[in-house]
Length: 171
Image (tube, one colour):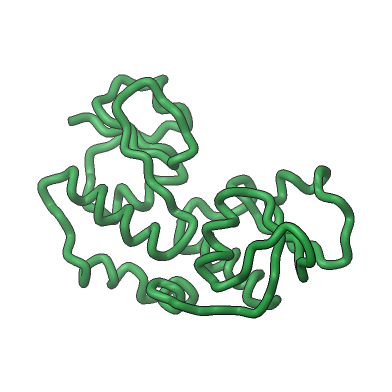
């Protein structure tokens, strides 16, 4: 099976034990049997869409990708990948609740703020959380919180979560 993955998903493919794959930001430019890519992406070939916005999504994605190989990883093996990432470990199976109301501009950010226990509301919010690519579209407000999206941040999903969650933990 020839697997094509995007740069943002490569780390998951590696951790899941897949050694023979091709990385291309545009998987349809390659000849392949299966594309492993972020769930928002669309391709013509068969694909396995994964989400990498929260620690539990990373865990589930590693598990799912390892299933497509003949080397399914155990939960303990997957948990070992989280060891050096403090916030990823903290929120992996969290049930945090915060008494903070936020307005959120982006689906990937909704996953994160819900995972961290914030309340998503439309009115009477304490903060507006938005991705950097919407900077020019957000109504100016005193309590704006900008989160780096895919452009200026590590392609390693654990490192992305560490950066993003650290920003949100300061609220």
